[in-house]
Amino acid sequence: MRTPVFRNPDETDWGLPPFTDADIWRDLWDAVRAVFHHLFVQSAETRRLHKDLRGSPGPIRVSVGSGRTVPDDGWVGLDFRKGPRVYRCDLRKPLPFGDGTVDVVLAEHIVEHFWYDDIPAVFDEFFRILRPGGIVRIVCPDALIVCDLLQGKENERTELQKQMDARMHRWQPVEATPLRVANRMAHEFGNHKSLLTEQALVGFAADAGFVGIETMTVDRSVHFASPPGTHLARYPDGILEAAVIEAVHPPSAPN
Image (cartoon, rainbow, N blue to C red):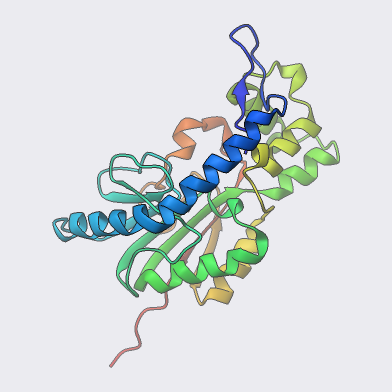
């Protein structure tokens, strides 16, 4: 898959470079890496993860699709890329935890990277690994902003979104048109696969068996003193871009 880049040092526009034969070889290399990861890397990373967790006191808090950083030292991350306290994992496969062994799951800007029909299985995995009473927090781009942008609506959310895209991608403000920003949000240069809303997240969570489902803005939380995550610190002007839910794995029935 082509990677968005700054086209050259004299240009500020971040976008996709023209397709060339090199992209075909890059796709082939990505496929080889995926096979190698499937056969060798994930099992080794799972062993390393479990070894490290055995020496870690306190609750197990997992950031799924974390990138190379986790919210703080109390978390571990799962991602295709490795980082401090981040373990390489193909998130399309079952997560490397036993049933009911995790206290908190954070999925920040990751579920939109799955095809829509695969998302129920993702929520089922979160439900499977959480202990009774465990918490899941899901954050993803809100597709309702995309709808407003496509319709040319002007409101606080669309204006903040255009400002964030202009800053994040070093576009000139005049280039951050509603249509361009809507496409960036929807597709993220080929990395996003699904458009989601709060209502969609609530439905997926309820179908997986979660209870106590709450919606909120990304700077709020029901279950944490301060919202966990790394995205808002990097993109503070994206405070209104996300759909956010928190939900609870049903506690065990009393004996």
